[in-house]
Amino acid sequence: MPYKDASSSMSKIKTFVANVVATAELGQTIELRRLVNVPGFLYDSAIYYCAYLEDNKTKGKISIFSSGKMIRIGREIVGRRKHV
Image (cartoon, rainbow, N blue to C red; front, side):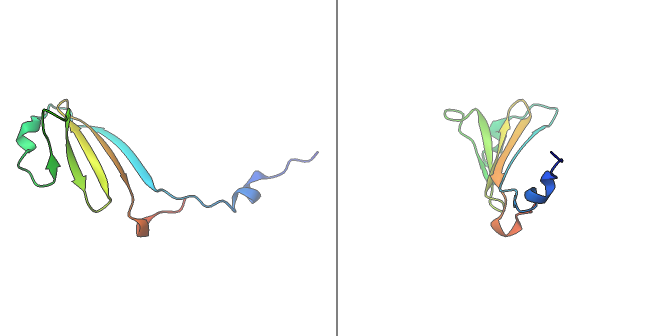
């Protein structure tokens, strides 16, 4: 049986980026309590193990840990979805 090119049937499938998860490391420790008065940051040591930064442009959230590690979770703006 001859080989059928899968790319012809795959071209009908549309995909897009709707949710993004990224990690980063600052390479230094962070004193989370210093972020309490910075606009956009949420931190309460009795509740959270990290500080949260709300990102209103992309409806995302960045978690910042005292170790300097960060996790960004959020979705792209609906009008800015990039088809891949």
